[in-house]
Structure formats: structure tokens, C-alpha cells
Image (tube, helix red, strand yellow):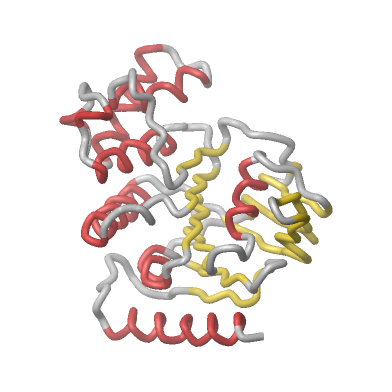
Length: 257
């Protein structure tokens, strides 16, 4: 497990409510969490527990009803290029090549054409897509589109944090495992703080340094589990199985309350 020094994200006494189709929803209450530099943190919980709401607060797409979210010690007031985001839908620009998609955020951040291209190709090489740089999204498989989306977010050199909201949940099981392998490889090659949202226990144990398990709505962190296993991890090994069993028990306990 590789943990950096210092806190990148800090949520303090966080509360969030929003108006849904059937009235007001109390998504988060007394939510507190720290994410450390270069840590791979998974937030785990079923649908409706507020985990994606927290990610959107960190992304600056929502403002908290109460409490605060700090990024490197400063309140988050809106979106920024200091955070890369990957959602469930890859959201690639259809009119741009793979290379153009990955360059886009770099150019928006002020990088010149030469440095943007060099950085984009560097990250595409890490995720195994360098040979497909000139293809358009419609020419890619589903798994390759997701890798391109990860590359686009990862390429942002000023991003202190990569936010991932169940990015592989719509992919079939075989491709999902391959994408997880690519993500871990990318994270090991080029360290970055990652906040990863998932409802999948297997995925959380395979990816995370630490897992924050959510309570039912209004959500808060009910339990934290440090996954003290070396990488690469054997999905079918006894150590991974033991963590899965422990976390399954914790999930049942928290959501039976």
C-alpha cells in the first residue's frame, strides 16, 4: 500500500439536502472524511446512500447545505482543472480523435500544442492506447472508450485528484476486470490521489488502499477498512476473499440498522 503525506480532501460536518421528484432528499448528514495524498480511496455503498452526492460536492458540481469540503486546505467553490472526473458514461467528444480528446483539457488549461500533445501521448501509452491515438470514439470498443476517458482525466498535470463515479459499472465482467487492471497500472506508474465510487465489494477490495463504507441515507461513513495487501492482487486469493467476507459483514450490519 502506498500512502502519501498530507491531506488532499477534507470533509467537515458535511450535510446535503436536495429536492427530488418526491420531495426533499437528505443525502448526507454529519459526513466526515479525509483523503490523503496519493491514496486510492473507494467509497462503497448501495444506490441511494449519498456516495455520488459526495463526489459531486468534491467536484464542485454541488454546494453543501452545511459544513465544508476542502481541497488542499481551501474550500471548494466550483469545478476546476485541479480535479479530473470520470463518470459512468465516458462522454468523449465524438468529433475529436482519441488524442484530441485527451489533449482537450490540457489546452483548456493553457498548455501549448506541443506540450499538450506530448503529455497526451505519454498518458495514452500508459493506458495502452497510443496505437489508437488517431481513431475516433466510434471506432473504439466500449472498454477502449473508458480507457480513453480515464486518460483524458489523468492527463491533467495540475489535477491533485481524480474523481471516478462508478466508471466501469456498465461494462461486462471481463472488460471490467481488464479496465480495473489498467487503472491500477496507471496509478502505480504515475501516482495520483483517487476517489472512486462503487457499489461493488469485489471492485473496492481489488482497487483500494482504504474503503469507506457508507450508512443508509442520510449517508455518512459508517466504517473504514484499510486494505493492507500488495499489488498486483489475486482476485481469487485467500487474502482478498477474507477482506470481501469482512466487508460484506460490515455492509450487512450497517444497512440492517
